[in-house]
Length: 90
Image 1 (cartoon, rainbow, N blue to C red):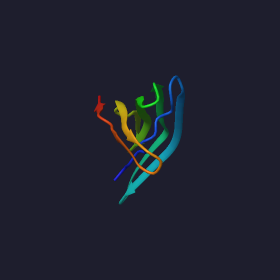
Image 2 (tube, rainbow, N blue to C red; image 1 turned 30 degrees about the vertical axis):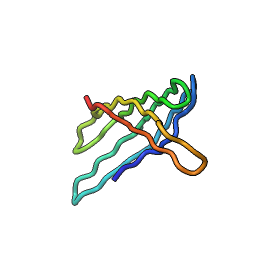
Image 3 (tube, rainbow, N blue to C red; image 1 turned 90 degrees about the horizontal axis):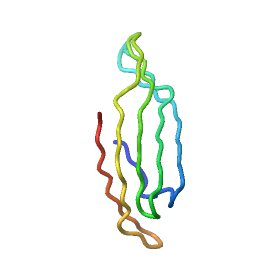
């Protein structure tokens, strides 16, 4: 299960995450280098997001499916916050 925090980068701020992912199942290996996640804050509670990666599997390489989404943090107090995060994969 993959999770994402409820936080947003704040109004007019960017958050750029780069990572390396790999997976091995039997003799099959899959690499994502780089995997990127780019976020932009609209106000203090809304975040626009795009994520994708450069995928290598079985000797074939190319960009993976991209995801685009909007995160809305609709509740926050000192110890608890909630957000909703619809995404579209294309």
